[in-house]
Image (cartoon, rainbow, N blue to C red):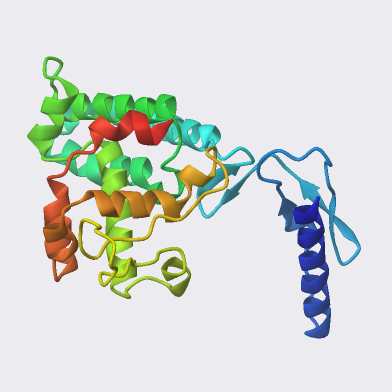
Length: 263
């Protein structure tokens, strides 16, 4: 109930700010979504106009749902990439392997990995759907029906989609710690003091924040990214350039932790 009151107060404050600056808002283009469970079923108003409530919405290309399970987003990715793959298959006799690989890197991979740090916690089932689609794409590109998925990835020198998402999170942490990321990212991470008198292993580690819920807290960026960062070696964390860091983590395989992190 307290959170509902806070949101309503913020909307009123926004309405006053808009009116003070002579700005008008198109309420028909505004949407409200309550994340998580809420028994009150609240309604939201801006300048005396009710904002339509939805269970999911698309924001900058990512479909966000109220339960943050990203089922709809993964479904959209699978449908879009599958359609693109079918279109290319119709012209397979006119496209050689090199051209197919270029199309794979230009059209398929960006779709499969777009904004993945946001929807990384899409669940094991959704993660498996994406890996299966990536396998289908690679089999078409390489014209190979015998090799395993792991062997196909090695042939093109690519990590799995899951490992790629983990690598992207670690790169974001690195850039944040070194001051290359926006300030709001810096506010989510806290470096642990190396001068602590406690017998703690590792240098340049992050403080693991306390979480209030296991459903959302353990899947928050501040908790998950800090835990990931602390899991890599000191030598990698202390690399002086982003280029060296990217090369170092490229060889790291987090697939054995998939069950623990994707639940």
